Length: 254
Image 1: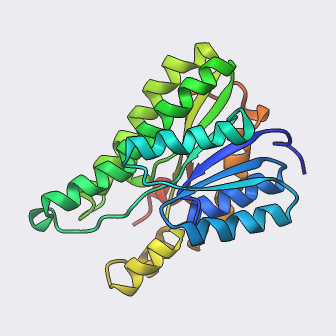
Image 2: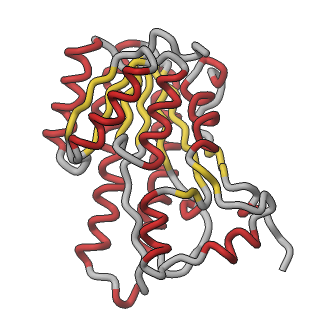
């Protein structure tokens, strides 16, 4: 497949989970990659997998909360490839706590990584895409962006912010050829979700029972939607939230 041949995609949170799965999905479609994560060993391993698929891959360590580090990562991408065609903002952190017991620093951490990190990369890459006259930005939101779920106040606030931020950017930058959209995954099996299950903070049984598809989602379920939004196939899709949840959000039977 070659729907992204000749393009450069920058993926944050690319060392594991959704980020690594999407990065390799882009690579299978021919995109060269800039992989960003705080953990060098993880992104270098993903970079090696991508190179084995026949594309170029640059691994850059950066904390998405650090504006200087974000700007340095984007500069490294431009030094290597001289363009960025796709930005996929996947870096994120879950946050589960009774709200009355949620420490301020944990609230702030969720906002800093999930929302501010998305803003910083969009700001830095968006300026380049505007100069290019084209580009696709895909932010990762969540069903928590629009559904009320107990003990997720910080996470929901951050992901709700990503949704409104996406919509604002979409209408601001579309006249310059830059499309901004969001994918809202449902319950997707990732290392972060596995950690919540192991800690007793998440039970998959009632989730599967409510999901019409009768299973937990896999990272592979997000690859097709991400490639679609990154490619010219979605050239007239602007400011949209694409929900990928197996029907969980529309299920109405008690």
